[in-house]
Image (cartoon, rainbow, N blue to C red; front, side, top):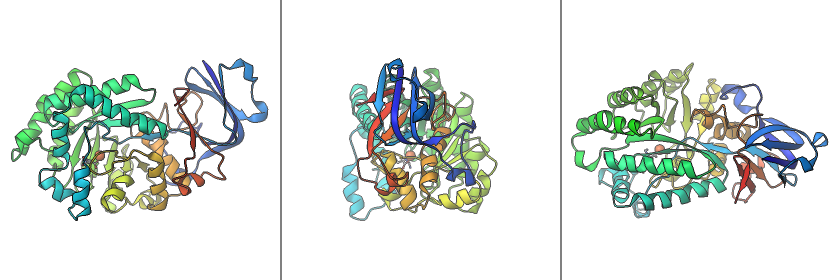
Length: 413
Ligand code: NIG
Ligand code: FE
């Protein structure tokens, strides 16, 4: 199957130096080529070049005219909770009326509310609702998506969520990665017995998840009012025994110590980071851990935005993901995430693009196969309307500029 994209105004996101992530000053560099074509073979980027060197069209099965638009790598969204049942619009009203995220959680709402809804929803219906969200984000240009469990909070319901993620993975043309987040909150039956719940996560849930090969990563909500640094370490160590690499929720509600314990356990990413100090930046230096910020959650909950600029100035890379979930970020629109990166976090459009593509691909362990325009990488691509610059995409953040989305070399509808 050969697919040619012609009349590309600008290819942006070209990377041929083999780097798996961008850090520091390199975050502001985006490789570009104007007036170009790109050829896809068997779902992979075969080659690209200037239009005047374009091969004959009749050697291709499909030809797409980009009519002068930009060609970009698809967004990679390395942090989402899109498998959930129903919604939490009732709590949205509570928030409007002044309750905080933690107030709602303390009243037994929040994550536990979603766990109750999920428990009372069949696996088939959960699959149907979740697949709809995955299709929604695919249409908005997401070409790789990490999905977490964590609204089960019993062994059976966590497995139910992860089986739904597996089915989604087998259904859609984008890359799906699964993360086990049994320690998202303490399940209702264990309220007041948090230590016993952590034991359940380590000695029953993790082995059960591993036995079915349902998750590649292990996550813990390491934050004030949720799980401690010690509990997080124990869960990461249990996960490591089954080959699960950590991706940790840290520093959303308080400076939690989650960054340091994540780095010391070789976490692939530490996520949220709305509240950090210089100590977190120092801990991350020289590590393989990608600091990942979730500006959609800052926007929705009115929290501070992560200090991405400071991290980059200190030579670190930063990734931006959606956190699509019913409680703190009911949107998986990565283009909006990119715009928030620019508007609220003062990233340049180049930095924001790298943060939403290559660096999020790194935070899923797949930046060798997606996240940039690279020969041999998967052809998961976005074609935009003609734009005067890359900056126009986050600047004109509501205009429907994404004209075509390609996943595995084929256009999706
Ligand atoms: O990443 N912070 C923890 N977990 C989610 C929120 C989950 C929820 O409220 O349902 C988050 O923001
Ligand atoms: Fe999250």
